[in-house]
Length: 368
Image (cartoon, rainbow, N blue to C red):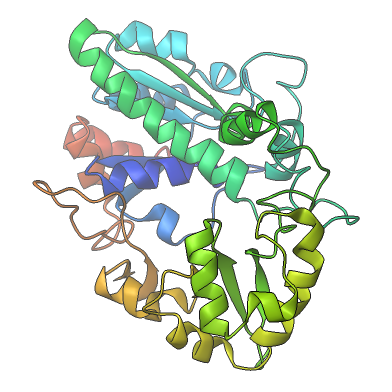
């Protein structure tokens, strides 16, 4: 069922992996919001259904009878009110995997409340550590809740449920909540804290910008490089590449926080001596863990991404290629949404609706 970014992203992953995905929009949408057209719609066909009409709903249920998976991203209870809740669909199709994508999950005091990525990651403790010391938390776009903790976990849950179904013969509900996914993404930091490796506040720890060897630096042209040489042998390569003499500059041991301010000032001055691309070229053959900070639109032009064909063109739009990659059964090239133009009658036919009935449903405006 069409909706905002997380569920369409999860279904994009499934389409990239070879699933035949049918996106269902509500005819006359009203307040229904759908994701912008583009990569998230690739590899699927689209129909619009008048779910308020009993015959439109009945035809959609017949379509779902042919499905392995049904995905909805409504607030809890909305699918049930529309007549497409898990009890209704699993009663008709016991092998169905029913994916539910929400922010807060199907139960709990916040379950019926509105929210967005920034809210879910805030409650998961994933937003608070992101930002500079003494400054407010900074949202990392909508990557952690919507996509990493949302759509990606939804796709993984669906794939796992399909695998389990091969053993049990039964479908089930997959409750994918973005707050749960964001919680899961914080597992490593919980481990660091338990081992005394994450004790400071925001911007005062090893991986949050406090350490000079894990940060970004401005270059002569206003561009930036990213530095991530956590291990000392890589840090030494960084200093050598920059022409910095540790002893002459009075730098202390790499992991000694009392010397981080001095090290940062030395690195800051050095990186401003050349442009971003000059530094990228200098460190290209090094293990110093220095890379240019590219915009999303530059990323496809980088030689490494180009060599791996990490970006593809679909319907005239450059976009990330499917991932992960498979050795024996490589990913097919992504197809644009409704490739070759929409043909709702043909689509319904492929999903088990007889042609005469499909033509009538379309002529009566129940499907479009």
